[in-house]
Every structure is written in C-alpha cells, then in structure tokens.
Picture 1: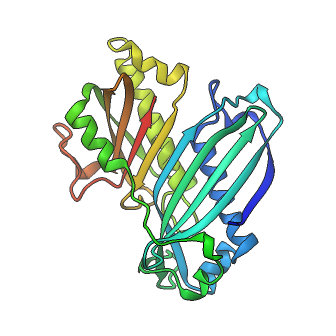
Picture 2: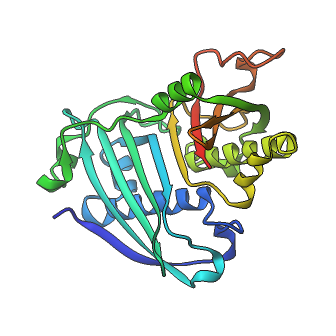
Length: 284
C-alpha cells in the first residue's frame, strides 16, 4: 500500500477568503506536505539538494475544491499526502494531497515535478535529468507508475478557443519581489497563483458591470485550478498577466498567461516571445 503522511494543521484567518481556502494557501500547504512526505519516507529536500545535487521544478498542478471549508467551520484540518515516481524513465515526481475538514475532503491537489541535475551554484541552476536510481530505490513498488502524467492545460485552451465564447480580456502587470521568491531568487511557484488571482480580481472589477456572471468568481470562489509552468520568473522581473475569460458549457473559466512584460506587444497583447512562463486556468 502506498505510504502517506498525515498530520493536523491549525487554521487561521489568513488562509481563507470569505468563500473558501485561498488557492495560494492550498498551494503552500501542498508544498509543505510534499516536502514532509520526502523527509518522512525517502530523504529531506535539503539532503536531496545538498548531497544528491538534485532539484525539482514544478511542471503541472491541479486543485479541486470538494466540500466547503470556511474559517468559522473548524479550528484545524487534516492533511494527507502521498507520492509516487512516474514516467517510463522515472522522469516525474508526483504528490497528491488532501485537506479535510468536518464535512470531509475540502481540497484535493496533484503536483507533478520534473528533476534537475544541479550545477552546484547558489542559484540552484541545473539541467533536466531523470531521477537517480538511489532516490527511486526509496519508493515502494506500488509508488512507481510507468505512465507519465499529462497536463490538461493545453487541451483546455484548445477546447475554449474552439467551443467557448470570449466574454472579457484584461492585462495586469506585477513585479517579482524577494518576498515572492524561494531560496534561489526565483519566484516561488505559489506566488504565480497569487498573480493569477490578482489578475482575475482586476478583470472582474473592470468588466463585471458588463458581464455580471464574472462577479460569481469573487462572491462564490472558484471550483478548480489547472496550471502549468514552462519557465521560472526571476527576482525583479516585470511580469504581465494576460487574462482571457471564456464561457464554456455553462461555466466561466479565466485563462491567465504569465510572462515578461517586455516580451509582449506594447500596442496590444499578441503573445509572449518564446511563449508564456506559466498558464493558470481558474474554473468558476
């Protein structure tokens, strides 16, 4: 049976919007949970980086909200996390987490990371690699999956473009400051969820009068997030988040493309040179 780490977290008001656990809060809980599983069952994140010279870059993340969990519902929640190696050549590390409250599972996440062979510099730069045999050996047989995980983000965008209706678009600018970063002065991936959430709110404030259904994203929260990271933002990068809102199958989805501000067209968004750094899809 796959191993899990289960523990209690004390809930405080900073983790919530009026409607739900904040996506960024769930992201932080998920990152801590994955790090904890590694420490409990294989080796610590610090040991992996400092002794094995292996790092991880998050490639795909999915969040699904299930049962309600609000600030006044409970004093604590239970976190459970499991991990497995994926891909025919052990090219992915996958972490699955649940956060449960009195009504059951409130949020469920899946994080898929790809390994890097680190060069040893302070920036933790590296090149794509497969997971070392010594690391994979720490996983049980039922914690190894030979098929790779495939992100649904590109398929979602294709479906929205073919079958959906564009109802709004907006562009917002942010700068990556040190409090948005992790130890290597690259953005902490959770903060890019925050940039996307901020862009959603700016879009609703700008276009909610003409499209009242957008306001549901603020009043009722969101039900799912699908995200993929293609490049990392760096300290002091000026980022532009281009948001397109689609109506599809009776639902609304916010598609956020994050990239360098100087990479897009100053006279109107026409895509980022070399593609976006990240794409975050929020489903209302």
